[in-house]
Each structure stands twice: as C-alpha cells, then as structure tokens.
Image (tube, rainbow, N blue to C red):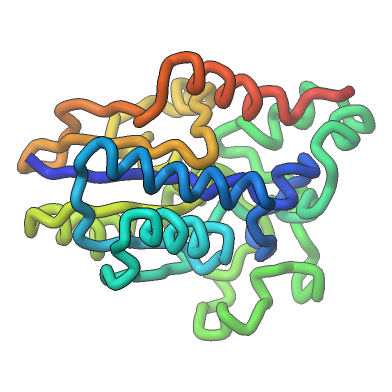
Length: 248
C-alpha cells in the first residue's frame, strides 16, 4: 500500500478577497497560516509519517508546506517544487473579484469560465506585462509552456508529466508523499487518480487546508481516500468554495 497526502494551500489573501488568483504569487492570509498549521496537526493526529513533499512555485503552497511540516517537526524533509503544480492560469480574469465579475457577466458565464472542463477564460495578449507567467522564475520555460490562459483540461495536461516523472516513482519506492498545491492542480490529480469523467470533475471542490489522504495499491490505483476532517467541517468548507462565483 502507498500513501499520498493532497493538501490545498491555506486561505490566501486573494482567496479572502474572492479574486481570481491563478499564477499570481500572493501570500497566505492570517487565517490561511492557521489552516496550514492545523493541517500539520491533523496529519500528526492521524500518525502519518511523511517522507517527501512536492509543491508548486507559488509561495502560498510553499509556506503551507513549511507551516504543516513545522507543526510536525519535519522541516528537514526533502521538498521538490515545480511550475507544473501551479494553480490553473486564469488569463485576463486574473485579479478580478469573482462576485463582481459574476454581476457584470452573469453567474452562468462565470460558472463556465470557472468550472467548464475545456473552455478557456479570456486570455492575456502575448507579452502582456501583467501576465504572471512572464515572471523570471519561468524564464527557462518555452513560450508554449508559459500560458496566456488555461482550462482545467490544459492544467491536467501539464500536471500529469510531473506526476508520472516525479510523484509516482516516489510512491512506487514506498515513500509517503505530500503534495501541497492548489484547488485546480489538485482537482487535476484527483481526476486522474479516480478516473473521473470530464463531467464529474466539474462538481469537485477541494477545500483549503484540509489534508486529503489516498491509500493506493501497488499499481497506484486508489484503495481508499478520506479527508482528515469532520463531515461538518467538510460540508462547510466545500459550500464556501462552491459559492465563490455567485454574484452578491
């Protein structure tokens, strides 16, 4: 049996402001830091011993991993980072308030941009300096790898090579792996693990700061999965995520 922990970063400052964040490198909010430490406590209480950690290149995921590991007194563990674990790139929606965007364009249109599988949001123009994919940390990526916008489908496509090349081999080596990443990059992985249809994954909501533990067979197919949280905590957290795109 192999153990995989998926941890969406704690609440960020832009989560709190209900803004489309994507590749913008915003910090955790004060509440997000509490969520990250709580995630570490939940893992400790579950008696899970982590061997290595994988994160995106964005500070909200990196700091979530740090705070969780600090709570576990395991900050010395190996930590690998990749742009392929970044949040979905929201294109020209980046930075906009979701509720205000829904009021302007209609909840149905915002729902399509947020939750359709293969429809891209409005894209940045090429070389638009506001595109966070032009940040120096991505200077070694090809032009094709630096997106102007992404759908969940394209997020899945750029995530899976990292799964196949880095995370899956660690699991096959019987390492307990934690992936600290983002709502959509983790939805991409859950879709792959659970062989979810394009329609089923649209209703999948992953809350911030709550570890999702997968027990996998030797071939990395799921045996079971569970959140380290109560049913009441999960219901409240998922409802919060689902309501983000509604007009006020």
